[in-house]
Image (cartoon, rainbow, N blue to C red):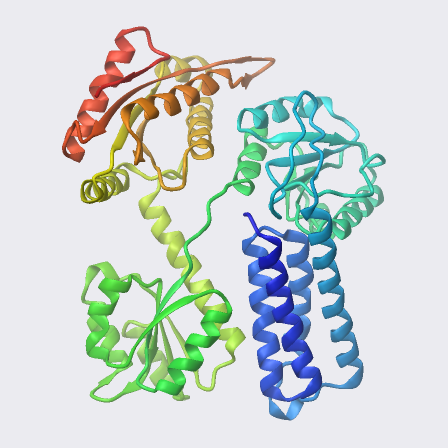
Length: 534
């Protein structure tokens, strides 16, 4: 994900400032500030896809947490103090070097393409393939090209010393001994602050995978993995989707405790909203739509358990995680509280790093559950129901703002014949290919859903019929160029599309019906075309 030099430098400077504060006054509170900032920085690096820097920060975080202790453990011993300081300085130096090398214009070495320049710290849609045998991977590279991702090829001996980092490094271990490929991976990891490092053709046994991951790989693909799986991972890593900030509702009657909790969450980029009265919790939930509730156990007129039981009476909040905060240490009471609607129990005073870790892990699982409910399992796009809900919301916004809205229905041509000729797994792969292409080419604000089978729904807010036709027709032409490998050959597929637009058509159901009629008009006219109504 894109990351500006200023943003990365600001985060790094914040870490250095908290470390210097601890050096100047090595007390427990200062170390807590440093540990929280370090944890926040590690999370930031992970979120921005700066894989190499994240690994360094994560190891540093583990060392710091091992020295956390309590007020009696500080200052930490002199040797640990010096070692920790050296590692902080080393991380800052790597960040500075990455900013220097990645902010300057970079030459695009893809054959047949014009030179391009990087405007920020995003490595761009470029990957490097490193290996001794290029030929087996040519089809994979061609597939990536259809999605706008260029591939530069090197042998392990010819990788440039002045590394201008791409998004992803693919390392094929074929033809290398165990010592050769582990050494090469370690070298690439050491020099690559941001790139995701993927091992290809790694043996599937435990020892080989363990060695590759220990050498610095972010993930590995065992020998014989279908190219489609590798393409899917690379497209995932190159996605431009920026996840919305996590949101937490704090239910706490103590203003001092609330400020401490919100400050701790803010350090890790987590948004929060606080209420002091449990009776306001339902209104706050509906308005704020949090990912998690942090609930004090004991408040005037209402306990946290009582509030949780009320919350669980509402179906829309049944799965919202509730984490209790309390000085209560009675295990029996804690278990009873969890049985009556809670998900976790944190005793006060809480470790801020642990609080953030628990909050994030709970929210990640909650969002994963919601994604599985709202998205299609094969493509990751919105499913039928959520597509229609998003379309209705977009239509209401368009009406309120007097803006146009285009709706397109897309259907893969002769799809039954594809399944009958090449098999259902290949049919699934074609559906995924179109889903990837739509996600790559459309805006984050656009609605992209799998409507059913081989049919897709696309909503384009702020877009009229003529512009929508240009967008969909360009995607149609590019989709027809994709070569789908089958045995020793390949084949192409096409799609047809129909477009309808608001305000010419006034409601969501009518828009879908009109777009459907335009789609079947395109089918009757010979397929592989886009027809726009209005």
